[in-house]
Length: 173
Image (cartoon, rainbow, N blue to C red; front, side, top):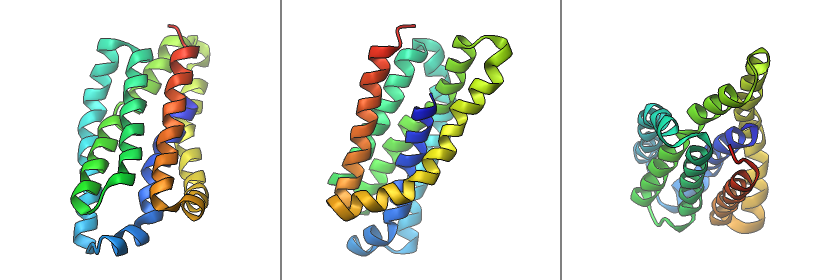
């Protein structure tokens, strides 16, 4: 769960790190860029509640695989955009997937950890977000310098896909 929340914050920060490159390449104004960001924030906000309900309906194991799978595909999809509209759509999809991540991480910690250690488990699971935010700038810069900005998005999407595979293989709750 720590790794999932770390990936969530890593994936969302890639755009922030690469914003100067993307705004120049796509000739985006600050207003256009703010609309791209708004797409993420809108879907993330709605999906925080809807994602929680999804976790209740299909369970934490499948719910987390679904959420991380959606946001990983969305992260990789950024590599294929050609302008602000496509970028905004990719951001919206990223928020759609990420919105279920924290409700899922919370549900997992509550379901699987004994009461006397739940707060520690929640702290660890949620601490992944800070870790992801801290490593995002240097990791993104490194990936972009080696593989270009498109490669940075593909790489983070692939890491998420690997997480989903490991999650489904490892957790059988």
